[in-house]
Length: 285
Image (cartoon, rainbow, N blue to C red; front, side, top):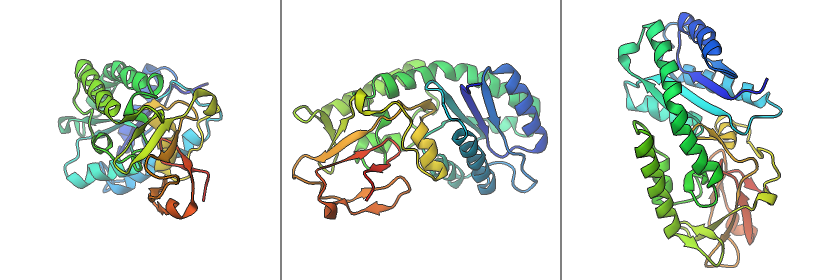
């Protein structure tokens, strides 16, 4: 059966893990739940809990031979008590999941926690529909699918934060509209793309260049998740940008790979390179 809803929870104990899997599987159609049961001392937003959740999610997604183009990815966690906890979660899951924080008042309350998650999944659907419209249907005019490591701008600086946290549907619509307006300001019409602060032009690929598959995905947890999802919604299969320089015949600046390594493209004498939303660079060096 095709999975439409991937629901992840970080740092559950055994009882909460069992309850989440049993309840959500019944109440949310076509879903798969990853909620690793952690030992005492590793509950909550600990590094072992975050990494194990990412590992299990990666493994399950990688087993889907024909992933749904409309799938959703949710990540739930209790509100972090320290700044580094949210940083760890963003650094591990990239910007693939819709991240929803559960009030600390629900901590250690199993049934209320599960009921709260059920309610939030229902509330989030309309928000994810807006994200999907911007990321897929409007992918050539909206910046939500940009490769966040390589497109340098105030737009991507904002998208690297928890920018949608606490927004209702109208507020989310207004923010997306504002981001689109900023994006349109850097459009280079004669090149059919958008210019970043390094004078690189990112031209959205034509539909016939996307090849209809979610490729390439990358091997690390973060690269893989970001190759499939953006802010909780599926990316358009195969979508990428043809990137060239506005000022020079070849690309002269360094780029960053999907795993965060610097690639010295200036020495490769490339007129253009393909960059995917998860910052996978093709062709390889």
